[in-house]
Length: 181
Image (cartoon, rainbow, N blue to C red; front, side, top):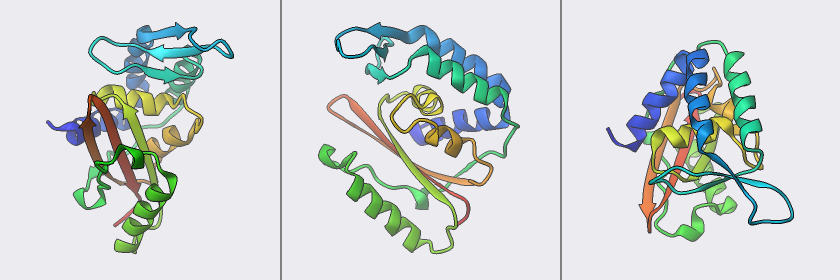
């Protein structure tokens, strides 16, 4: 399976049985390490052999919050992978997180499929492992806390487009969710 299919497989396991998926999130907590390299505030790192280190804000607290959300989430319908919803990760790494570029790409996708009523976009930089990428988005220990979790666990979304690229041992993934096409 490629990245998109593997990510979708993991995401649908979570959507179909959120309660059971809490055990996967719990198993990933062992990779959280305190990182004191920044003296202004405590940082945490998700450190796993063979994977890029991923900076976290709240560490275990965010993982525990994710577990609580999954405990309280009812089973959901699986998402369907739609290649036409894929937004390609650009070769230029400077564009990976460029907000104006990303807004333009999302608007182009919405215009291309003018039937889309609800849509959401997020990206993940760090892990080329689909399961780790999903866990990081579910835990959502970033400055955008809560948005990615609620999007992935939304009953409104039925379809997803996924792209993943590796450049210089750094992985970037784009996820575009839609209610209809």
